[in-house]
Amino acid sequence: MHREFILLILTLIGTNVGQTQNSSGNATTQQSVPHDRGTPNMKDMPISMDKDGEDAGAHVMHSMEGHMDMGPHMKMTALRQPRPGDAERAHQVAEAAHLVSERYKDYHLALADGFHIFLPNIPQKIYHFTNSAYAIEAELHFNPQHPTSLLYEKHGDDYKLVGVMYTAPKHFTEDQLDERIPLSIAQWHEHVNFCAPPKDRRNELFKPHPEFGLRGSIATEQACDAAGGKFRPVIFNWMVHVYPFENNPANIWSVERQGSSSD
Image (cartoon, rainbow, N blue to C red):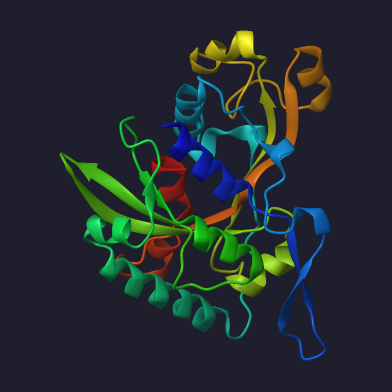
């Protein structure tokens, strides 16, 4: 369990790699902080990796199952006015996601290709099969054929693929996200204002109306410090879900489905 938790956390907090534009307008990669090259900044870990790691991982996943009621802990990009070419660019991403999804309808193939199930023994609405190599690649450039995670529903002992998740560096601007998938079509999201509880209060994460965590009442650094917690303004990378088996763009890029079902 600890290995799976560490895998997802490392995948989603990402590395500190930025992008700039060259003279032709194409994205080029650069290292924004040399000492972070290829390695996540461990101080950004929202929860320590100790014997409570499984419980902490369960809290993270259950907290993220339903974005719309996360209040000050949820940030979403605003929908922009459509521009020429936006629909075609989004369609190309959706088509690539569909091809990938067709391959991985059999989850055994996903496992064989380096995807790992996060917390398979803990009940979840959506199970993330995450590929750490693709997550690192997403820090450098966008390849829609390499989603960071595959999203499965569990039915008995089988898994049904319903979508994919792409990630982008958490320091990205909305303009940089728009270069990957147009913001007139898709809304990216990230998790913010996270207050990790002190170790002796970690069980409070699972109580109704908690102070700490992604559904906690604490949403400022000052309040977190006063409660003895550790504050992180942003945890994990930018994320966006795609549901490529749907028949129309509204459902393919559904924000409501993200809010009610997963992550």
